Image (spheres, rainbow, N blue to C red):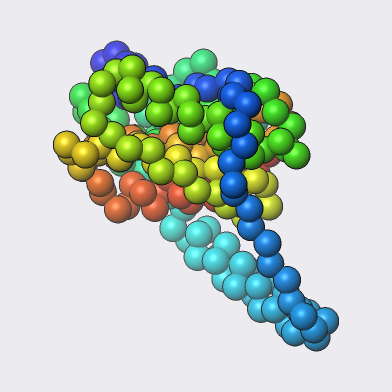
Length: 207
């Protein structure tokens, strides 16, 4: 089977962000009293530990040349499709399907430092919209931001197709001048695939 069967036809991905606009994305949080803050930290630590324990039972951490991440239980690497620094994961037993739901992960270059991450977000949004228009697709881009469990800046872009259940989701985890992208192609909006992609992105840790 050819690798192209696993890829989004637009190849909207693999961006080297180069726009000049800025995004209005930010997240802040604070606690007023030090005692409350300390208690919240303790509770957060306990919750994180419990979450990690649960993840360990149902998933596995994978090491690649650019970092590590957790692969959800029931998913496996499609080794015949992986290559060139990009790794594909599908539901076990579907490695040879012609068009399986799949999640890939790879690293790449982008033009901004972390303190310019909003420019990256705006540039990527612009590029996605331009490519959708160029290919004449009936789709809409939705963007949001967050952080990985390790605290790295993460931007999420959903490409929702209006004429099908397909959702393509891109998680960009940023460092200065580079990124790791987790790219999900979910052709039938299977919630287990959505959760597996989120787990892979949220659990990512740079090497």
